[in-house]
Length: 278
Image (cartoon, rainbow, N blue to C red; front, side):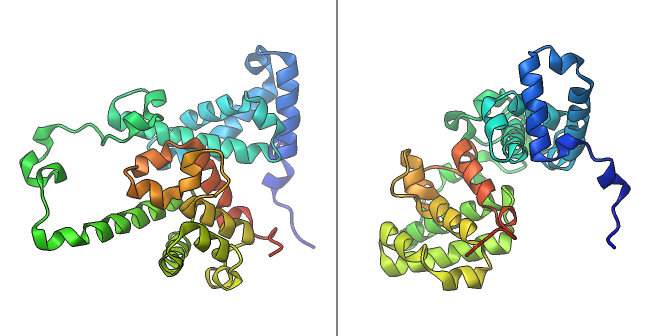
């Protein structure tokens, strides 16, 4: 007979998504003051700080910072109505922590750090922090020799691949799985020479899924993330990360795109293990 741990027996009802939904609905109906006076709301915030403590420290923040981000997400109607409220809260917390980390580096507000026009800049840095002169190391002051200019395009493509891999890893993907998937997609893209044709062929490529050990939902998500989705509402979603990075977007731009961050997080293989029907 399997043993039940003491922690499992004493786990609060709101630790599950349905329990969280019930609590959020009750607090919502009770009015804004309920969050200040309800003992279960206070326990929820303490639980949230513990739940996201490790994630907060990963981005150089405190568990309380994650709890604040979770609280803000829990106030939204969309969180209460979501199929999995905890999944929505987790994504919102991750997005906020990423933005706060960028804000600290840029010496600006979290809201400004979320915007592409600000997030593209590197972290604030004093010239005196480097022993080498600015003109010696900054790429803006370098030009390619004539015999290397033909390889500039391939270098840009390599950077696009590496930035996409980094994006996946930051948002919960295993590096080997993400890199293997992207390299396979790029190899087939070269074969077809057209993103739409490559997407159409790859979405039915069961051998690739088997090779990479990816659930169906994760494989389709990876295709849409990298190659774009032809019928998506936004131009960025139609382009995909590879095209966006090649035409001038940076990794910071991708991390500032809340819709993209949500898509990458929800497509992570661990979110679909055990529920994939092929």
